[in-house]
Amino acid sequence: MSLAPVVTSDFLSETPAGEVWNDANSAALITEIEALSAHGLEPAHYHLVSLKAGDLTQAERDRVATDAWMSAAAHMLSGKLDPVSLKPDWTADTRDADFATVLAYALATGTISGSLEQFAPIQSDYALLKAELARLRQHSALPIARVSEGAPLKPGMETVRARQVQVRLIEMGLLEADTLSGQMDDATVSAVKALQAQEGLEEDGIIGAATLRALNRDAQARIDQIRATMERWRWLPADLGMRHVRANIAGFDVTTYEDGVPQAIRAIIVGNPKRKTPIFSDEIEYIVFNPWWETPSSIARADKLPLFQKDPGAVKRQGFEIRDSAGRVVPPSSVDWKSYTASNFPYRIRQAPGPQNALGQVKIMFPNAHNVYLHDTPNRDLFSQKQRALSSGCVRTKDPIGLAEWLLSDTEGWDRAAINQAVATGKETRADLAEPVPVHIVYFTAVPNGCGGVRYLDDIYERDSAVLTGLDTDPVALKSE
Image 1 (cartoon, rainbow, N blue to C red):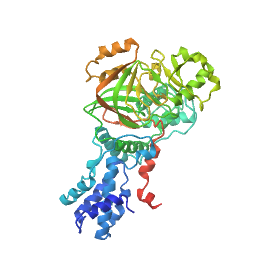
Image 2 (tube, one colour):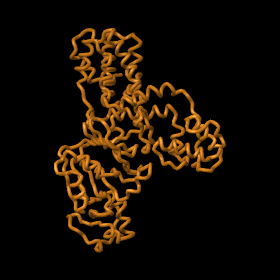
Image 3 (cartoon, one colour):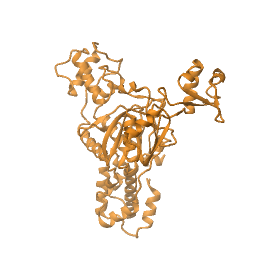
Image 4 (tube, rainbow, N blue to C red):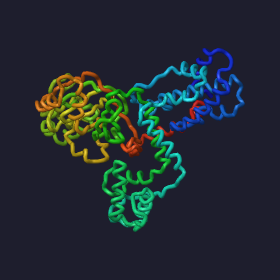
């Protein structure tokens, strides 16, 4: 069964009749396909068995080999999975290439070796993941001491599971080998906190669900995270932008980049599991200081209507303005809140700039179909939490004024003093960037740890499994169903 029947047929129809794939190029292709494993792809999904069998006619070999190369090249360039099939609201520019021209040249010059590798993402983070994948596979068969499921283990508890925790912590090099008391004692709790710090979890010394997953994450689980993240890298544009912003939902952070080098990392708050932050790429165009909050209809109906029904005074107290369908301001006292439901609520709700404004003092805009943007928050104490999936979908950002200063650094008239002055007025003020800055909202559960290694993050939205299922499914089998 052909994986890429149209491009394969087109290529062969435009190639002079005769031997398209000679023995040397065919042997090189087999090596190239086997090397796909280093990128988290399954070589068997690219006709490897047929190509290695050596019993194909010349015409069959030409078709199978061309189909295998075209399919592998497409998957290396822009991913095996169509991200839209996983997330219908995906929006990002995919990478593109003239596969026919590249393959024709490689066949003519005998340079099939390396011809697939050239389509892989060029970013250093991807190269790091590839190296980590190779390292992990050397240890993937080694078993680990697992901790059984159960209620949270808290300091001072003495159970069989506490001893399992100690055995695993010793195995991880976080606890002295002679610490097997079976009690969540001070040494054990300190070791648990060290693990939590490594994993970006709350450092409370309690073995909850997320910490248990971290303890039981063996080499194969880490391999899975690497493969899922490498696939997501292949979905991104080839050029992320010399100056760009990258927000990682799973890492609860946003990083600014100059010439591909990270400049500053800021904490973020992302959507809760019921209102997940979408994954997409766009361009930051302008910044609003002291913004009005145009409350999304979904939030107005699900959150604000119940609040105002319970406490009508909250409308004025929290600085909200009510407008009808014609855009006219409606006095809150004239609205019979209890007469409405989420299905028939007719009003538009806006919140004026001020200390209670949901967007805080800064809104960083990249107009998009998801109505998602970066913004400040009046609830800045939430940044002290390690797990910050707490918003309604937008991305709340720590130090948004510092981020705004970086974004406006090439925009005349908008230095830090001008920014501070605009904020101090308390009035809504817009600043247009001299040049748009690319922004990428990503979901990576395996990221650089800053010390040449990889840090593994909790899969807060449980998105990795769908990616792995796609990577492990033979596309030939799918086409045969």
